[in-house]
Amino acid sequence: MESNILVIGGTGKTGRRVVEQLTKKGIDPRVGSRNASPSFDWENKDTWVNVLEGIEKMYVTYYPDLAVPGAKSAIESLTYLAREIGVKKLVLLSGKGETEAESCERIVMSSGIDYTIVRASWFNQNWSESFFLEPILIGEVALPLSDVLIPFVDANDIAEVASTVLLNDDYNGEIIEVTGPELITFKDIVKTISTVTNRNLNFHEITLDQYIDGMRQMKIPNDVVWLIKYLFSHVLTNPKNQLITNDIERVLGRKAKSFLEYANVTAKTGIWNRIPKNG
Image (cartoon, rainbow, N blue to C red; front, side):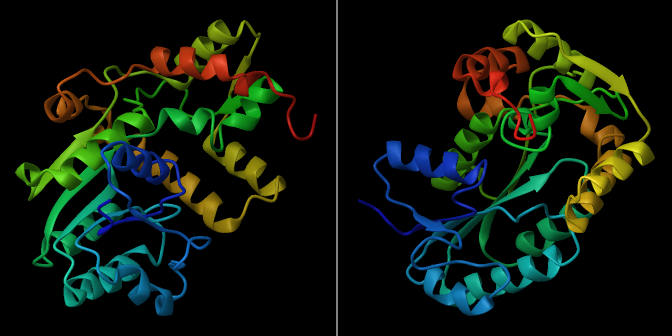
């Protein structure tokens, strides 16, 4: 099996799905994560060389987000090393409507390595695998900006697009923007999850300051609080982030998954009917 492809963040939301997509195609990708062997750690550059050895193509996600302080420097160092080692192509997962992420994109685009940028809007899976899950389990969802329209996109669609452009050089030099097929609000989402789970979920409109204060009271790490504040105050309200694209259809030849499709599949797993950790 081919094993000259590296997936950095290979155990994360999109990364593990990219690994699955490549495995289905008969490829045995190298997983770039702290628990893999060889290990990859963004905080320890000494781990980078071994992971990149013999790699021709790589998919890169930066945790928790390209917008956070330190991301630009890390992407700069990794891209330089990749070029020196002989990596031929880099696919970068970026954030739609994020100015800081676009700085990271430019580093990759000017590196001399073949590239494709995959810009994604917010993931559906934030409601089942990330920070929106706990409020759903409790049944009380309190969020600011409840009427902002967001083209939530499915992580499986992102991964299928990423694995396709990684293997297909027709998309070299392109920025692919992946969104869901409709604009929906937080209120719409909570209503949809209520319906598919047959649960009575309560939605509460709060201010961004109240939301941030609540996160601090819950002892959420400062870098995560900073990121959430940034995403709510700069990204969700960015007009660029409120546009639906047809790039998923263009690359995959099928329509993007809707939030309702995601919700129906996710409800069947029982994830939204578990007892919350503090319950």
